[in-house]
Image 1: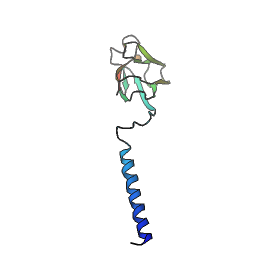
Image 2: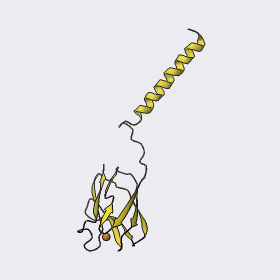
Image 3: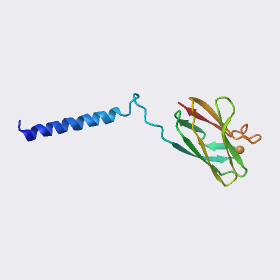
Image 4: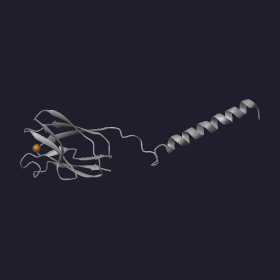
Length: 129
Ligand SMILES: [Cu+2]
């Protein structure tokens, strides 16, 4: 085998190893640093669309809530302790941004806390794993 041929073989082996390593990168052993997530949400009477969200522990989340309804609405994330964790008030026709970084896995209820709105169906969930 000539020197030139040998170096081609080495190069191809190196490339193959790099491809294998890249495929392995998505494994569980080394979690990638949490990158932010943005959700666009429409609020109307009386619902959020969408109303189910998923995120990872420690992942910064940005909700961009647009009120497409005819009355004001709120977007309240309830903590796992049952207390309000984050809240945005969105006037009709307006858009508000709410940032939240969950620190524990679980199901966080999302509600509009104006009287009767949650009961009318204005609620959702943020599932954190
Ligand atoms: Cu509401």
